[in-house]
Amino acid sequence: MSEMINNAVKRKKILKLMILQLHEGKAPHEVKTQLIQLMGKVPYSDIVEVEQELISEGLPQEEILKLCDIHTKALKGTIDHKGAKSAVVGHPVHTFKMENRALAWEIDKLEKLYAKISELDNNDNLGQIWNEIKTHFNALMDVDKHYQRKENLLFPFLEKHGITGPPTVMWGKHDETRELLKAAMETLSSQAESISAGKAKTVTELTLKPASKSVEEMIYKENEILFPMCLDKLSDSEWYEIYKQSVEIGFCLYDPQAKWHPKELKKNIRSVDNNRIQLPSGNFSATELQAILNTIPFDLTFVDKSPIECQRCRGYFIRF
Image (cartoon, rainbow, N blue to C red; front, side, top):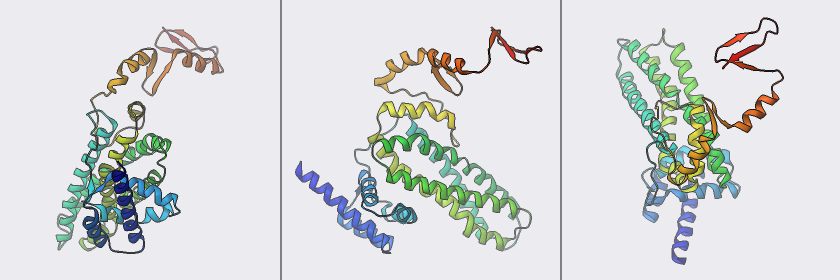
């Protein structure tokens, strides 16, 4: 057992040194070569723990945010998922991954259109290509709902488990991606009528590619590091809270149809849910409903389901 702990300590120490070398300016491919030679594969959990340790030891979160993409480049292909849990259909992680698959499809289409732009010698077909690019960027804008569910539902549970650094860094990358996508959409709209082949090539390299690349790199970070780690850390009851609240924010390019309940919680969930009043925006108990109605500063009379305006008091009756 002690040998396993020592090996884990050594692994994280090596990984920490490699990441610090990146921050000192060492080329990602050199660091990657060293990692492979020294460690072979890097357990996904080590990456999160080391990033958390570096922040706790004083490395500014802004510095990690600035070099986050360089970390990804150095680690790509070296991450070990041995022993990682999987998520069944309907589970929030499965939904996140299906959304990532849809986003990756949009990015793949964009890459093909970028290639067409780079091959253009004149303005022939440019308008059609430009409109297709805009259509796919419209789809990518839907990623905001994906990020909102992470920020408002997933990250609070990670922080509850003491994982604060990585969510903060990732939230910063979300904001960067949002700004890049916004700039890309503004450019696509403003240049739609007057764009030339030469201008289109420049805009593609400076504005469009960075935006779609930012989404692509976040997909990798999520699938390879964040989601496996979250499956280890969060309990089924915590995942169920995320599952129940996800619909209020919405989904990204994917409409999950399968319902999910944790097996060991299913009986308790059913008994609790059966005693709660379900509305499109959420649910509450009869006691909670009574408390809400008691705080409303006017009287309601229930007559039937069709609201009718009272001409005398300008209030409403609801027939039942």
